[in-house]
Amino acid sequence: MQWSRVLKQPANMFRQTLIRQFHTSFKLYKEADFTHVVIGAGSVGLAVAYKLTTSSIPSNRGNKVLVIERNESFGQEISSRNSEVVHAGLYYPPNSLKTELCISGKEQLYSLSDYFGIKKCGKWIVAQNESQMNYLEKLHEKGKQLQIPTKFVDWGQAKLDEPLIKVGAGVLESSSTGIIDSHGYMEWLVSKIEECNGELVYDTNVVGLSYDPHNEVYEIETRSGSVDGEELEEDEEKFVISSNNVINAAGLGATDINNLLLPEEKHLKTYYAKGNYFALMGLGNLKIKRLIYPCPDELHVKSLGTHLTIDMGGQVKFGPDLEWIDEIDYHVNDNNLNKALTEIQKYLPIVKRDNLVGVYSGIRPKLIILV
Image (cartoon, rainbow, N blue to C red):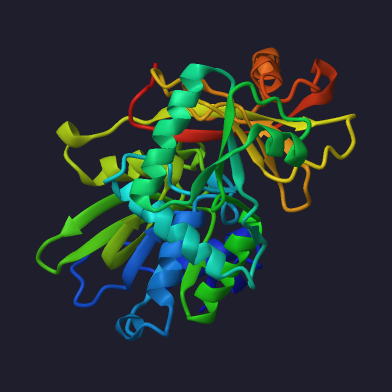
């Protein structure tokens, strides 16, 4: 049964169907319900499920894959509340897995450009003083080390290419940076997962997770309802799924899933880094052709700064800024607008206070607070 069809039924009928389909009490399993369960239907969870279900890979042909998502649809948290930037891989430690995956991932994304909106528009990192130029020099050398294409743009050429951008000291161009239609990308992943008989279930929370070493399976206790566990009805029937493998791609809920399985001394805490985004109003089409990033504070790199991005239609937006919050709250904080404006005017002085309006916010989960 394809859960995409089940989800078109009324909620109470969906729950009854799901409960009948899965076990409702713990027991020893001779064979797991699924070979792989992916928790989280954001861009990462869907990409993992896509790779696990792709029938062109011979080792996948016996896989039974389920994706569990706590929201009513895919990609409603981190994956839909970001800058939609395809990063080149310049900012992370050279020998880190993050750098390796970023470099490999961008090329794989660009190779799929026939299936969803993606564009290699490039990015400028703009320095306004000598200290920031030193930062760009180091970034350029790092690009050479990692074989990421970067080059310095002559000041005269910069004024011709982007006449509205203020360049105090210099520009480093990252030509392999791009933008993506994140929703279109995730829609494509969902279609490919279903095409290969993978299953997705929404509006379902993981409330328990344990490992049975005797049968070498994970037992995943789930319950239908709100994403906020406190709002789940106490009498809501739980159901249990078994799987040989569990992939934790739960994003903002990833540490909660981690803590269900591991002993208390290994529990993790999530810190929420909220970023507000601001749209440009009243200036018409500025015809900016690429992403514009300021230089971050090299000594206290808390974020990449309030940068300028464009979407697939060429519309300009700014963000994210950074504020630490105690709980998930997507309300746009206009109190940060003046601070964001100060940062934006350093590289785009044409923008005034009345040209900015808060449009959405996103939250980045962190394991530490950067101060």
